[in-house]
Image (cartoon, rainbow over all chains, first blue to last red; front, side):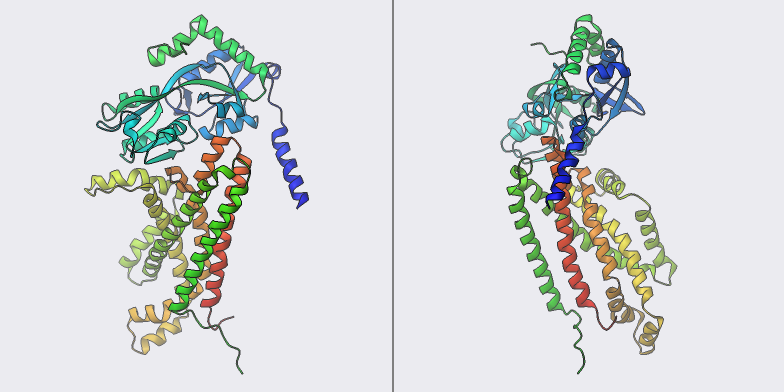
Length: 252
Length: 260
């Protein structure tokens, strides 16, 4: 028994013993590995084989500023931060809301955009947090939307889907009364469904950041510097305008 | 002085066996709850979520296992028929279900079946549980059909010839002579399918049915600690299949009549 415990401990140590690549190591290799989900339009989405979206273009822009080539990795959302801890890639840009719980596990950059969780339902459905009482809500597993819907008293049931697009499909199929998700994604959904659904109020506001492995300070510093440069040089505003017709940077 | 053979299972004994099995599972859930609550974070505080997931997994397995047994019995008997138009639908069903992945079947029943049914005027709203039950029951039913067909073919021809020459109709021959013997032969492979079904039910996590696997991925995405979570999930699955096979082994022993 002791032996098994020891070997288990050794295994976990091996699994976590690898070192995150520091800025110097990344610069030497010339390529940065970035992970995202690829199922969260309009931020990161796979169109056929091509990965595109606001965050994908932004990350490509930041890498260009840092003089690096990019290698993209796509993973299920709830696996992204776990893979980061196992050094499968250098950083994650996948619309992660900055929460204390997550900040315990990873280090966040300064926010690269600000948004909120919106309630979307069919016409006549719930519009506000108070309306959600006794209703079923679809959200994606492992998201801040799930945490925040749980905080609403009296919600009948919260259904968690592996992908946000699945959660939206559940709303369209009438399996749930409301979907809670990103406000920009919600606007896209309303536009795409042409009046079959309407956007309600914001359930909460959140700041969205990129994540690096806990303690990888050199990379964090470089990313923040590249982001600040992009915000001031106008390249950020250009990408944001292309996707949202407005500047989505955090105003405070 | 003849050695006393175990008697074949009567109705009362079967009821007793089911009651015992149910009690054993209740006890198992009690033990799992107790053990998981003692565990450190991230497992301990969320023990109830795991138990709820395990209960859903078991419920899914039992309901779809029972329906699947019926489906397999009907399709298996159809496949041994001498009339082509009786065989054809069963052959088509087994061909379709065995030739496509279970994950696709679950997603199909959940996402594609309701609109298709609406198209032909049947308005049915399948929730997550029943979508999963339909897909799993049809899937295990197809595999059971092949098993039951093999069992029927394993009964020597002389048995049915003797029954027919004694004046039994072909239906009576099937229900009173062939099936009782065939079903004893096929208990082990049917149990095999049931255990596989319990593990396959994890695929229902893709349609947001809160069973054991989805409970695990919720906890793991909240706590970012995949190692303890996945270990716990695997251990609970193992406990479920272990208790299940304990009882099916008993069943096997009891339905054995004069044989090796």
